[in-house]
Image (cartoon, rainbow over all chains, first blue to last red; front, side, top):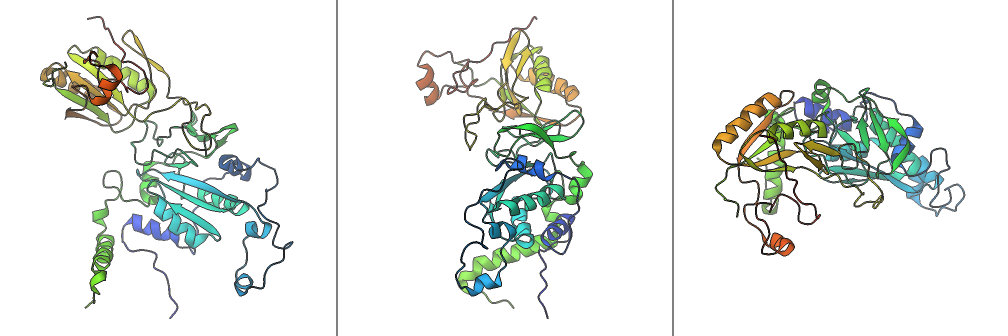
Length: 254
Length: 156
């Protein structure tokens, strides 16, 4: 029988959302639309409309060694063209942000090719070839994995994921890269490392509390779903913890 | 020396305050007699990007601006997360509580009693201000940034 990944345990809506994001067979709901130029502006790696700088000649131009693995694995578009490796980094609020660092890494590993994610407690960075990055970034920003108020695109100075939200519901950002306008739309006024943009980039309205609670991938006993309410998840984690602890003693399951 | 017996409280709203709200809250508190010292606390908003690739470039931020409390002007350089107060006696705490109950209507807050502010100079304070420092001002400002506390005089 072919192996079918289960992606994760749990019966709560949070567990369901985690599985949904990780499962590449599930199409993520598109919530907003951001143009390619806007993405390039927020990333800040190159000027919009300029050519992609390259790190090496395209694979078509250079002689490839005779390697069975290279024949087997098709290069991504960016690797084929010899693009530079660039990054996007997200900071996700613990107050019901739709994705979280570990969740992002799992999701990206299942859904994207040619990536190198880095996971930290409050931020998650993903590196890949530049034109692949812009494509993936568009997916990550336009779908239900993003919320304009609770997710920050922050290349540096990421502090804020565990802080209380501001009065207007925005996650703290020392560099105030994104501002909530009078019209209720969040606009990026700086690129991800904090350099001012020539024009503001709108990323849509913050989602409401009900939507966030229904789409979050973090357990939070005060503002969302409590972890201990998901007994299946707790049981699974306890089992893993127990087996890992006993591993040195060669455990045998009855 | 500040008497360690003076009660201290802190006001912790569930949301971090915008300068306008902080200004209203502080003005409300400034009207209470019996508050000895007051400190606002929260994550900093530096004028210059301190690190990262954009290090050294200006950091415009709409929440870093001056507010007016009583007759004094305070240059906010942080997002107001909590307000720490040292009061004369326990009756003042109840007055603060009743005023805050009326103030925080859009989101809740907590009023906690404990020790949140220095009552004696530490080694760093000694190194910065010397042995003859005014101990009532100790702990009210960050010794490293050179800013001194603001004195608020209200008409009573």
